[in-house]
Image 1 (cartoon, rainbow over the protein chains, first blue to last red):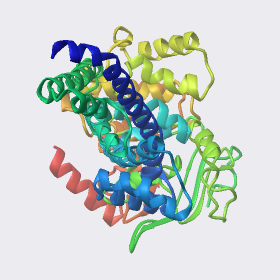
Image 2: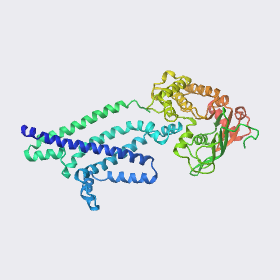
Image 3: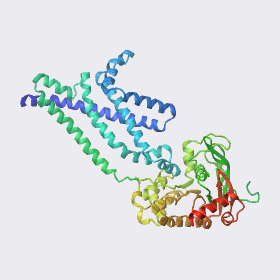
Image 4: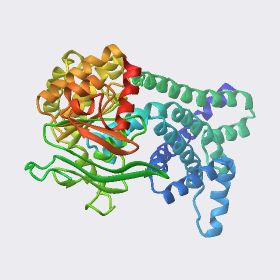
Length: 216
Length: 264
């Protein structure tokens, strides 16, 4: 048994690399898109605000699996054929983006109005107010839910296996298919996912401590 | 309206400014001039539009009609009469010329006392970090907080925070300083230290427009006092005249009587 699993380790490592790659893509893309759209939701003109609001509410109301199948199996109907890998990344990114939008909105809304006004009063432009005054303070509020969301993204990336992508989850299933060693392999898989997420939450706690000095 | 024999034009010229929040008229055709070096104090019952007026001067609030000029330049709108807002960049540049100190201090909590002052100097005035730090230290010294340059706002008392707030505003060398009830959020024993700073700025010739409930301070420090009621200017004059108990302005008399009853 042990030798069989040992033998499968390089294969599992490849799957793990895919899991990390998917997670990294989803987290990075959704961070950029979510922050931009979140700023649009808070500060944008009315049509943009409505559009973002509708996007976010809709996406968050759909099970992530439905979203993924829709992108992969549904979009070809309108001529958009995405390879399974990118279909999965797109679906997970859409889902995560909607969450990031809400984290950002909440974080920015928690900064008192007087902060913007004080920044205006010394002559900062809109962009300067955001980058020098609002974001540094909102960051502290944004961080805890966002890190939570990152660990969700790592765990949620296991869903890509359902589109036949050989991530860690799929690799484990395939090894089990050959060896019938379900129990040790699932435990190994769980440990790997746990290790990644535990490292993330440790990093998060350290970051939060670094920014804890900001009090109102 | 303005004295024809008066050769020096007003630094701040507010003319017929009106503003409504929905059906509520908060400013009714307010006119008011502040000359260079003058300290003009606005008093009046709460809800009389004092703070709104102040916030219109640096365009934190827009107004519906009338004009506000600083050194002849229209503040928030492109041309007097039109309601076309200036561009974001223009507005920011205009606001940099007026300093504002807030009732609730509004210091940036993530920056030190010096950092609060340096932000505008580096981002707006284009000073280097070293120059900005020097200016920040100078002004912190002026407000008696040289030793607190590297303290965060949360580590300072209310009075100290407000003095940093004043330093942050004056370090930008504004043409006029707007003070919005700057001692109202302070414990009584901390009011004096803040007013002392304002007094020393007045002695240096800083032009100021302030809203305050500190009548004794208004009497001692002001060139003129403006009494506002129901969104309009009800009386303007030298402190002795305005604060005299026997004024013929009935609203002012009522306000002062009520004020004395509650404060003495």
